[in-house]
Image (cartoon, rainbow, N blue to C red; front, side, top):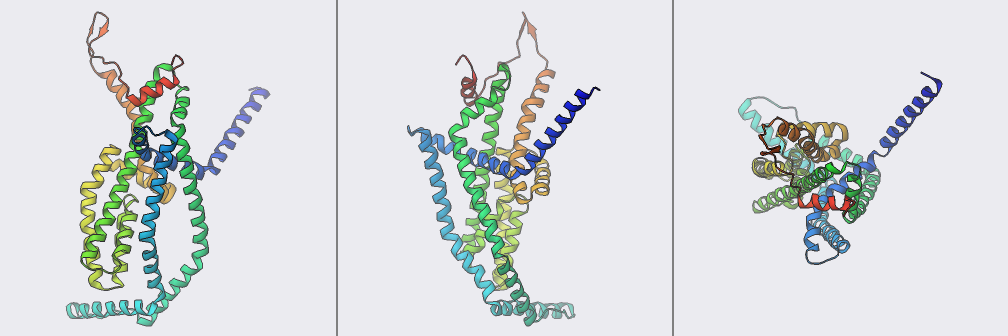
Length: 377
């Protein structure tokens, strides 16, 4: 190897390392961009529906995002103030909470004594009150840090909205530019792949949103019927955490049960039974249909992707795992699975023509993108 080759290879290694380091530093920005594209994919059907009324594309995008923002503000105005007030009451009135837990301890002690004949060493009311006060002080000390994190999340939210608007308005041009990197004969196939990935991402987000909304409303209605205190807060907690795959619903359910326990053991029992009943409908009817229609993956593979995503990126990684798994599955199907199946299928040849071969019929979306990239069009 000459000195010139050694120098060139060294520059390649340094450039590769610098690019990898740059990608590592830009990790959060890539996550924000991916979230923006996923949200935009979920909103695109609404934009197309508004455009059918002869509304310009830019105005249709603006109407869609303004409607989404107003919906979020209305839900937040209805749900968040009571929820924050309830949580504040739990930690401000430490004596009342301590008395409720002490009463529960007494009932538990009596039950164990009657049926088991043993004595339990349970904390006293004073120690419970001290523990609650300590927890309250720790939360108060963490509020500045939470405020900083909230500011960062608010910035990311604004970026998601802005990037999503730009993606919807420049989507066809962006995909058309990317398709120009592929040979002419493969552009229709890749246009179909991009369309299917976008459809799958949007369907998954809309499905998860629908499931979370149903779970939250169902829990709220049932708890209200049984007159469980703070039903709105408990229902919102369960519904909101349901959006986190696998464990989110259970975290919200058990957290709501513990909060209801501060009111009374009966309220806790009703909350737990309500959560368990609604979770059966969600796990066996709603979520499987959402997964099958939007992702099309085996549940074992979905769980594997979720665990990998949660290990790498925590909650954000778990949220992005299923959409990314769907995209990977679509790529594998179009680039490897279907070509191999077509290559192994027997085809009858007569007069130099394949009788069993069918011409590729791209979807209308792929045809429209192909026209953008076709130099003749």
